[in-house]
Image (tube, rainbow, N blue to C red; front, side, top):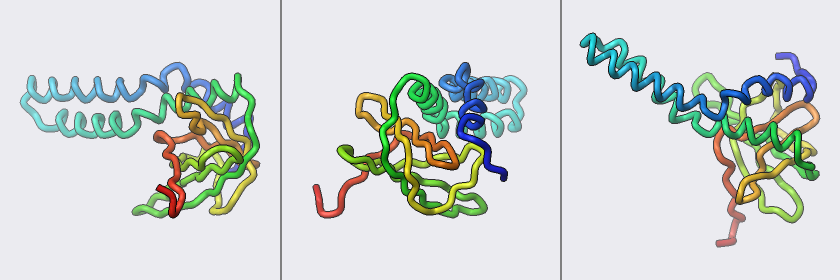
Length: 163
């Protein structure tokens, strides 16, 4: 995988903004149509396809809106400086990338992300961080090599010993 510039990574995401926020609904609509087709044709294949589409639709319902929020924040908001710790976990044959966002004056947040045409390594990176939403959670973090957009909603990190 060849690393590309930050601007190229952001530019590659821009065309998805038109449909990204609603994409999970199209998957769910396709699943419903498959159920109808399975009933009409009395055949299990459309039902299996429906199951797959429903799984994707439910599991990725935050990814699209998070991409839209990240691009809007990048275009309209001012980032703050902080640090991101990247960890990598292996699940089956797939790597899962996790970011822990550290920023002075804010609680730490964690989220899973999918690298956008760059290869993260497990380490701490200086980062520019954009925040949004009612909880002022991070919607975008950019490090020297790449863009990190939450795949799901970020979760605040509970400090050890603090309740």
